[in-house]
Length: 171
Image (cartoon, rainbow, N blue to C red; front, side):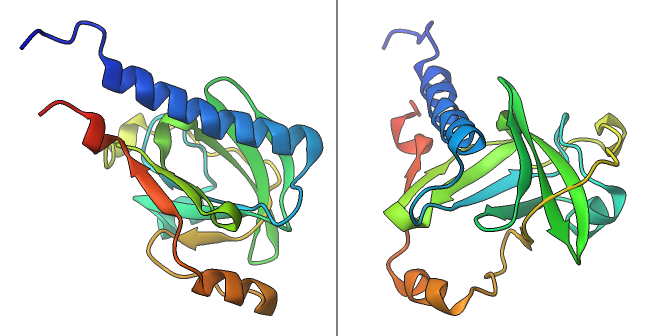
């Protein structure tokens, strides 16, 4: 078999991360429409992730944030996005590189993506936390959210189909 000199798997992953970037850019420009909302899981220890120290202490490996009703100042760049969320009634600014995203889901339309990302990096490689304001609730990656009554019916629906890149990778 010929050697893959094009690294198609990396091209596909980059294109799918572009879907996440484009979806967030639309929300930054137009706001969330209809029932759309996003669950974004990411590795907190990767370079470029900027979290306040108390949040990083609570979620040292990974966390999931929800962009639905309460988030502010969503800014989307080529390599990362920043958003302000509320943690225990305190506004905190987060910056998350697209390369740190492990999962992205929009349960309202049963859409989801899963990416391969390194588990963590040495603590010394982490960027210092920013002390800017923030937005909606952050969730531990493995805990279920406390959903409002109207969202509980949605949570009971079948989960979004997760597209993993593994099925496209050469072994």
